[in-house]
Image 1: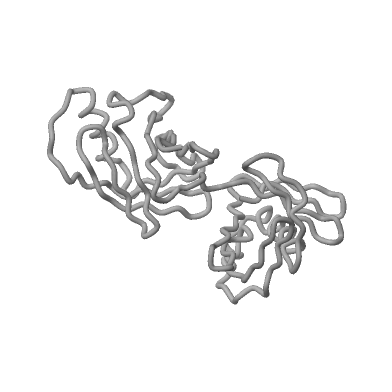
Image 2: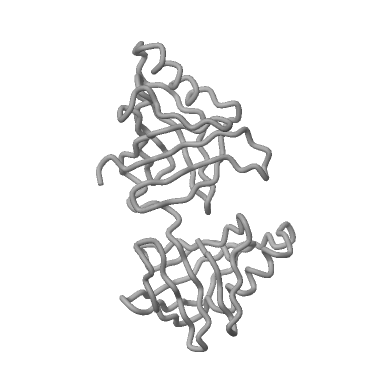
Length: 235
């Protein structure tokens, strides 16, 4: 996720939910969004450099973007060209990409490390203004798969479902139980909250750390206040 850009000595922070992001694939391509317009480009990455190929043609959605998002996109386009130097690794979550003129783009990890195929414990839910741990503790977990499916356990019963990640938006479709066990009242209550969302699908915005991530409602979209806290069980 793009955090800020510095062009000609002037730094511009990303607008809220600008959704400018890039995913570097193992196949030598980079896909993502400048903020309003999606892109796909070939890449060559070394320990210190990133070389970008010409962008493939992509449909534009700029007309539906806010003016500040369009302006931020133009700043990114100024930098995200040809050969960039990986100049600084602030921490495990952030890198800076610098062009020959000294302009740079700061990228922060968007998806948590090892998102797919890893077991993620739901260690709490957020409903309205209340955050509380689940009665079943570590028994509640999700496993997200690269094909868009999700499996796991809701505290009492196993489940299957669908989930998507697009930019900083996590969308979970209503899970389907694959077992029919009965557990304690508190555990079944928590399970029903996760099985019966008021919105289907349920979309939330998320932010990631290396081994954990938070997904919460987006008040700008008028969504019911609901969120998840995930922590990796197999670090």
